[in-house]
Every structure is written in structure tokens, then in C-alpha cells.
Length: 481
Ligand SMILES: Nc1ncnc2c1ncn2[C@@H]1O[C@H](COP(=O)(O)OP(=O)(O)OP(=O)(O)O)[C@@H](O)[C@H]1O
Ligand SMILES: [Mg+2]
Image (tube, rainbow, N blue to C red):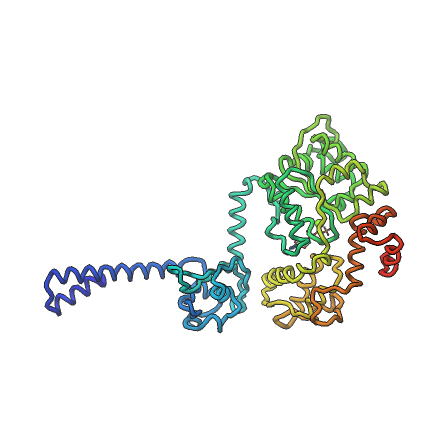
């Protein structure tokens, strides 16, 4: 029996109500029934979805929590309901969304109680233009990753593309928003949409590989193969057969014919990593492919047309190598159609904090820890360190500190085994001394123009000083070695 018919029966049996009144009452209770049913339905839906929901009213009082939220956060709803979010979790995304009356998107959170990583979204709720509360929705990270992979396979990748041919990163993986990074990403996104050959230059660990994958993922070839070969890691003759393939009997051991990486990457992109380490002989063969768009397998006679976009990377100074005769000038100009210099970490110290938090979240997840952040003194040390290993070094320092620390925040004690601790006063965060600034500018000018006689002349002109002054400053900063 429904609520309304039970009420109607009770009214009929106990009160003397004319039938017409009874009908009207019954209709009203039907509506109540509907409301009760839809509320129950709503609750059942919210209880069963695999998304953790927490709702607060306009004052921040928690009014609803579903089962999934309890599981993800490790918080029992009865201990949270009725409490104020500004007391229980004032820095959380729900409090932020309510306070700012906006939406907070895709924030990686890690619940200490449940040891589960989740992606959180929160937004303020309005009714008739009036703020009535805020809602947060949490999804388990592993589930999001699983979904993203599934989605990527369906939408972006033909099912037959093997995993090693799919780019591992895209532009959203590149952390950092300082001027230098933003400009590099802007240019990379531009060149991604063209078919031009790209040369990525930068020190070790600056993110060249990250950019190479992202450029392919952001290109019209995104659903075609992306193949990578490290020219420094493979001996010359092996590299040649890897690049161009071989025909049966081309050399001892070539019992079958094999397609080279150029053929396999057809219609897609080929990432030639550490191109500066390629031998002069292979350089000339590579130049031929770039000019003719065709290859010939080792031991083969027929030419095979290939349509491959080249993304090359190096941490060596190719221009300087050309001067020294170690790199072919014609190949250099072929590769250098669009070169992107990925700045060293010390040139974009404003990214250090964001990168640190990114790596803290990443390694919290891996090591099931809950480090909340990094202390100002430790960040100061980061700002003063020269980071010869760049972002890779920063990640390894954070990874070490997360394992080493006994606290909730990474402090100088947790990093001092890895990097020098600066004696600079706390308030100097992100400031450089004039001498340090001078040294960095000189280094930058030499990186740009090279440290040949001619390069130094251009560097001095760009810095607005005489060549003699430049030499004095090089000596002073011990950069003349
Ligand atoms: N801007 C960034 N945001 C997030 N992670 C980054 C960024 N830059 C680099 N990394 C990470 O730092 C590590 C080193 O980056 P990567 O391998 O792309 O550098 P590389 O320039 O190719 O280095 P190498 O010259 O040694 O080959 C990787 O784990 C990469 O994911
Ligand atoms: Mg690399």
C-alpha cells in the first residue's frame, strides 16, 4: 500500500469527510508520494554511483555524504554530517568552491585515512541565482586512469597500434606556467599542428622527451604510430638496420627480412633522440631520407616511400658540432627548420613550486604516503640550487625526501643529503643577487650564440657590453674554463 492510499484509508475510516474532499486530499497525498519516491530514488542513485559525493549548504554545514565518499575519504558520514566544512577541512576543494562561489577542477587529493588517491571536482550550487551550497565529487585515481586508457584506445588509437607506438604524454602533462615555459609550450603547440621537422634542444632532464611525445599527440598524426629511437644507445651498424631495416641475407644472421623504424613509423612521427650522437655516415643517410622521403633496406635494391614526421632532440650544441665538423651542416639545417630550446630549470625557477607539488602528489600515490607540501626553507634551497639534472633531478630529490621524511612537510633536513642548503634569509625567495643574475645572463648569451670568438662578440653585443668586459666577467664568474 502506498503512503497516500494508507492516509486516505485512515482518513475515511476515522474522520467523516465527504467523498469530494477525500478525492482532493488523496490527490495532494499522491503528490507527496511522488516526492517521497523521487527523493528515495535520488538517494538510491547517489548511493550507488561510483563517485564520492559530499554536499554542504550555503553556510558550509555538511548535509549529505554518500557511501562512495566514505570509502574514498575513509571518513564515516555520521562523524561529518552537521559539521561545518570550514572547521573540518578549511583548505579542501569544497570549502574553496563555496568560499569563491566557483568551480575547482581536477585536483589530485590523497586521503590520509583511506590511503586512496582521488581526483576531486567541486562547485558552488545556485538556485534562482542565489548561492545555496556546494558539492564535491571524488573519483578514484586508478579508475580515472583506467577510463582514460580505455577512452584513448577507442578514440585516439586504432586497435592495432602496439603500446610502444602510442605517445605517453600530451601537453597537459607539462607542468609549469612561468613565462619561459608558457612561451615554449605555446610554440610547441603551434609547430605540433604543422608537419615541420622539429629540433628540441636542451640540457639533460629538461623535458625534451615530454615535449616530443606531446608534439606528436597534438599533431594531425596523433592516431598514427609514434616511434622513438635513441641514437646514442645503439652501435652504429645496429642503428642503421634499426632505422632502415634489412633484406634477407643482407648480413650474417639476417635470416629474415625486417622493416626498419622509418617504415614502421609511416604516416606517423619518428622521435630521433640524442641525434647529436649519430655518426657522420648515418647522418648522410638520414639526410637522404629527409630530402627524398624514401628509404632502401640494407641489402635491398628497391626504394620504399615513407611519410614520416621527424622530431629530433639533443642536449649537445649542434651548431658548435657543425663548426667542429662533427655534425653535417646540411643535416643541421634540415633538422633545424623549427628548433625549440627547452629552458633549464634554473632559468624558470618560478616553476619549481608547481613542479614540486606535482611530484609530491605523484610520489605520495606511489609510496602511499601523505606529504602535504614543502617548507619555505626547503623551497628557498631549491631556488638557489643550480639543478644540473634539471626537472629529473628535482623529481628524484622529491622522491628521496618523501621516503626520508618523518613529517607531513618536506623540510631542509629531508633534502640536505641531495642538494646544498642555501644560507640566504627566508624572505629572498625567488630573488637573485645581482651577481647571480649577471652570471646567468652571461651563461644564457653564450648558450644562445656559442662560446666561439664570434659567439662571444655577439653575446657581448647582445648584453650591451664590450668584448673586453665580457672576458673580465667570464674570468670573475669562472666561466672561462
Ligand atoms: N615540465 C614538466 N612537467 C612535468 N614533468 C616534467 C617536466 N619536464 C620534465 N619532466 C619530467 O622530468 C623527467 C625528465 O624529462 P625528459 O626525459 O623529458 O627529459 P629530457 O630532456 O629528454 O632528458 P635527457 O636529455 O636526459 O634525455 C621525466 O620524468 C619527465 O616526465
Ligand atoms: Mg630524453
